[in-house]
Length: 100
Image (tube, rainbow, N blue to C red; front, top):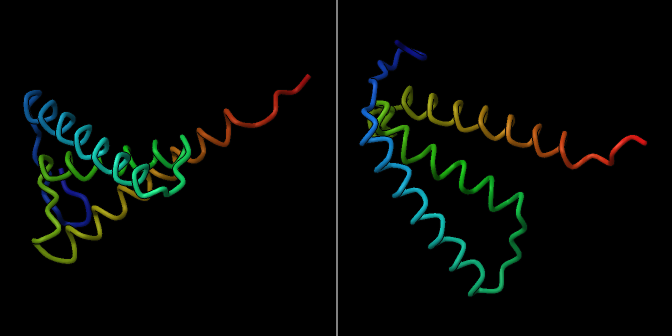
């Protein structure tokens, strides 16, 4: 499968699992640094950070590497943007005041 001329590969279950573990570790480190430095971080921002970090770890396993040129960078940013847009829509949908 190709997206914008970038050939995608199919990662194995172990590769995706390793990427998820690495993303969780990076996310915990970033949250710890932000909390230690006194920067505000609410649940929505922390969730968005986890989503983007997870995508950054998994996209390499899919064959999207930003060091391979502008097409790879464009695909990476496009997919991350779509994921964030979906995440923000879901957050907006479930944080709205309930209709009585």
